[in-house]
Image (cartoon, rainbow, N blue to C red; front, top):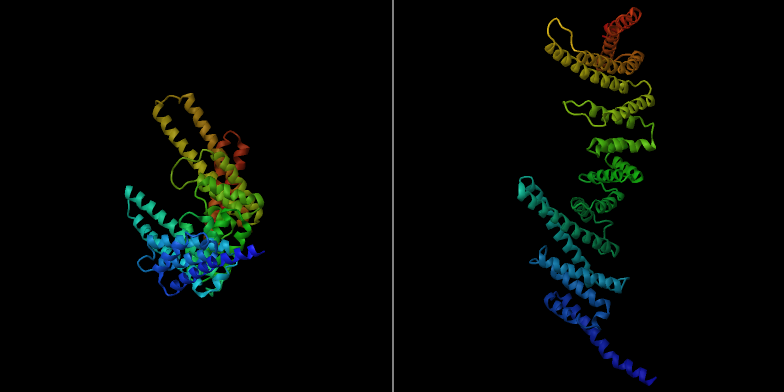
Amino acid sequence: MKRILFLLTMSLPAFLVNAQKYDEIKTKLTLSKYTDAKADVDKAMTNAKFTSKPEAYLLKASIYAAISMDEDKKGKATGDQLATEADVAFKKYKEMEPGMELMEDLIYKNGPTNIYYNYYTSGYADYDTANKLEKKKKLAKGEELAAVTELTNKKWLTSYEKFKKASEYADLLISKKIFEIPLDTNVLILAGVTAENSNNKDQAVKYYGRLADSKISGEGFESIYRYLVSYYFGKKDMTNFDKYKALGKQLYPKSDYFNFDKVDFAVGLQEKLDDKIKAVEEVLVTDPANFKANEVLGEIIFDALNPKEEGALPANAADLEKKMIGGFNKAAAAKAGYEIPYLYLGDHFINKAVKVNKEREDHAAEMKARTKPGTMASKEDIAKRDALDKKYSTELEQAQEPYEKAVAIFQTKGTLEMRDKQQYKKAVSYLADISANKKVQAKGKPADQAKYAAEEKKWNDLWETIK
């Protein structure tokens, strides 16, 4: 027993020396003698007994963080390096003292505070540089553009990494009531923006989500809700899509963006035809009778098959046409008394007939040019002519049913707007043309000719009544 007491007595001087060393360095830190304090702590950190206590790392973190905020170092490489070392030391301190009891000491509260401010200041400097480089990119070309783009991306990334750190320290300082605020909105918005611009989209959502969950509002914050709505739709997370869409609508009631539905986003977020179709079809998987989804599916394909400018149609045009017809018919079935899907279908087949008619005219001119006067056209030319006539009639007649359905709907309506009257007259006029073509094709069949002549007259008479 005496031996044990002797050993304990022998260890006390070493303990007292270490305790005295902590106090000496802490005093220099308190008096802002940072250079001396750094020299002392660097030397002391080589002593295993000194570093056996969490206070050693908190001292180092506090001293390095304080120096990093010197005007000649703040926001520069030297300051960044000091802040990084302070961060590493502070992490070690937290590992050794999870409860962070030493943080109750006012002088030690400055450590993480300075680390926060360094990351924030340096991150903002990179953020500002990145914005300036974005403007420069617009004027750059060739190799210069590639170099500026690379530097811009690098600045966005380094800025994000610093704001990420600043955000972590902000949360700590708020939890310790050193920052008496519920949320550091400035650092969160900047962390979100830089994460987004550095292609860390999943991380951006974390920062934007915290801001949105706090219902932050006002000028400049609407984009947060827009980002979240778009992001979660892309991830097919409809629960969060609906959540942030509702929040956005609540906080920004005048914005049309939050009135868009799933179909709008399905189409709006895609650029290629196949991707747009796929996105709408994904909506239809869970809601096959969705009126808007079916109508939009039809409209997307209609635009592809009926381009405003001449060009090659998609290779799978036949399959797309079937999808278009199905979409429009389902849309019409979902909304009784709605003529638009039928008008689209009628217009599509009329457009196809017009193209075939152009082929007929071109072939007729070519056939006439190569056939000598007084002689018969070749069997090949006659066969092609007959085939084109048949194709023309087929396409033309496919417009009949949808146009008849559209006309029937128009006839049930009361007063029509000018646009409706124009569509009504167009449909009736084409129905008369279809009957006239059937009459021609029924040559040699008097009964059929009389029937189609009567139909043609009926449609022409109706056309005259539409004023």
